Length: 264
Ligand SMILES: NC(=O)c1ccc[n+]([C@@H]2O[C@H](COP(=O)([O-])OP(=O)(O)OC[C@H]3O[C@@H](n4cnc5c(N)ncnc54)[C@H](O)[C@@H]3O)[C@@H](O)[C@H]2O)c1
Image (tube, rainbow, N blue to C red; front, top):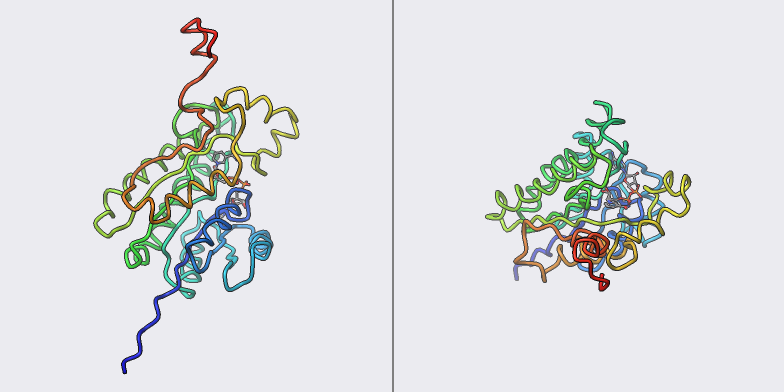
């Protein structure tokens, strides 16, 4: 009797997985994947996050600088040694300067390298595996990629990331590869540490602009990623799903002024 070859393990890669959003995504993607690779430039933090989530057979930490092609290739190799990549979540990201006036050419390049080019590098490193698995990419963009809310270089890179999402969807659709983006609004994470230290009220002040009168939780982002990466989204490709408590739908304060209606 010929032996049937067992199906390769389904791998999800989450970059920036030591951060609050990345960790929540990694936890959620364990549903539907055999192994989750937590890739982060801070290898120690990735290891702590992985052990916090479960054993090494399910959650694998890999130290990886996603802006460095060689480091990304090594991370893809580590993932391929454990199975076949079915989902790539480009989540690593950071914003460095708050205004265009404060943006140096170096900051512009760094923000674009981390928030845009890295997603391209990671996708190219795993594209052959995604073809074999007919897998998908989920890019963690931001509402900053959709309208101006400060952080110019980061915003331009996130807008580029939304376009990269569409580029992958169109060119790689014939291989069964889907690409989608999630655009979170304000999420209370380490990324806000300096701003929260300077103004402890920053999250309460932010709520004012959100129609749902709250900010986003890391789990809200993780739920959207899980949906887009899963079979229920099998006909969805090239879209951006805002997870923003209604922020990009419009502004009640502006509607109140323009309509002079107290219902807003
Ligand atoms: N927090 C928010 O309000 C918010 C809003 C919209 C979008 N986002 C996006 O969500 C994603 C996660 O953000 P977060 O708030 O969890 O940030 P975070 O700072 O908590 O985590 C980011 C993680 O990325 C890692 N990282 C940084 N540079 C890296 C590199 N070169 N290679 C690999 N890993 C690297 C960091 O070590 C960190 O663990 C980012 O893409 C961010 O732009 C966040």
